[in-house]
Length: 212
Image (cartoon, rainbow, N blue to C red):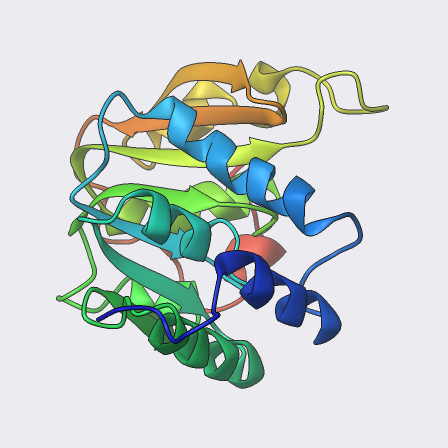
């Protein structure tokens, strides 16, 4: 499908901000932040999932940037998912972009979603341990979890090794891969073996009892 007349991703993100789904800063900043995820991929993924898509970043922006990708925008909020559903129709990409309303811990148990994606992207989903446990089960072996991070100079940011310890990631089948700035800070992790079936744990447990 083609976008509705006059509809742009900028306009969609402006509406998202008015609804309270995006934080402060210009729409251009949010666009740049979303597009920075793409710098971590040598080629566009065929299929990716946005973990906690919220106001549409980075998922909606990347869906347009990678026009051949099949996309799942995952969020637990009914209001945000209604906004996302309207947005993908307005942008003319509802033939390949699907909105799923569910908690990640539950969605990752679905046979049509578990182990099905070449990439999972996450912006502001949660602390590292929660993001890793909720994101890894969606990946196929060789797939990448890509996360935006606080700037390395931010107070208390620590090092990537502090936030994403290799031993903890290995429990999920993940291995740290690389970091980059474009212009924000990003980390990527590759799934070396299938995520063990016991993960993710039931709803709320990854946050209450983090793995690391």
